[in-house]
Length: 320
Ligand code: SAM
Ligand code: SF4
Image 1: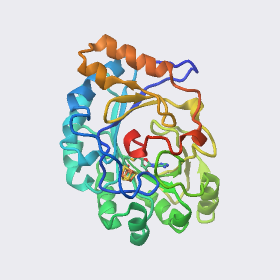
Image 2: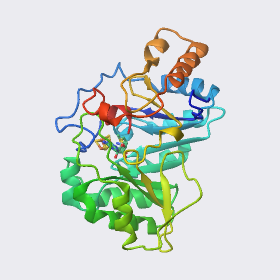
Image 3: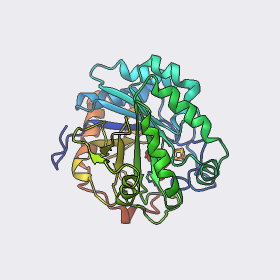
């Protein structure tokens, strides 16, 4: 469906939980956040009902996110239910990778199309400081390698001043076939700690010192706002998601569903449409579709990051 600014909305991020086994500094406060109750969270059948209504409006691409989606039980069952809906084009997942190794086979068997793994540094000390937990990076890398043998993999790294020495080692992961590495400018959203912004231009300058032939690729990859570069020595691509320094709202194709059923047209604003109340009040497919259309109609023209830091939402509830 096209919104009032002519954007074709076809991508829905589905947050499965607000819980997480990490506490990344830019995403959540150290003490965590007030968690939703089991009853508050949409059941898988409810998520599938919403996805079916979204498909009728041309939204055919679903990304499972969180919190950490893999802390929720039986994610493969949801993947196969979404893949079985007529018209579904793609179901993908974004994860911190800690539980990916154990669940990979079941996710692939369920039909998962691709996975994004969030990893901001390869240095254990930095990783522990950033995530406020002491898991080893090696476990995440093992999961990335296993996933890359069976699925397209993208590594997502938030650009932070203290990980500047890691940008080149992270980008080198794109030397493995099937792995793209994307760098994301930190967005000043919610209650995570905001660092001074590092721009994608600074990243590109650092990478070009090692790969002088790093050049933009013409082809479009994935469903998102990243723009991509390649160098002869890297078989995968380097992506940049520079929402802060280069607003890309004119090409935004997405909606976000929180784990409690709020459908949010833009990650920057708290407004949304409460689909859970509708569903639990007995709304049928037509009413659900009308509510999704209303969310699309309310999609703002652009984010306004200055307004969203300190908002009540946190990245773990809106799904990144
Ligand atoms: N736990 C999963 C993960 O880390 O991939 C899924 C949820 S997480 C909120 C989704 C993405 O949002 C991650 O790639 C994370 O790095 C990114 N993210 C979280 N807070 C951010 C912020 N303030 N600015 C930019 N990206 C952020
Ligand atoms: Fe958890 Fe992902 Fe947020 Fe990190 S970015 S705290 S892994 S939800």
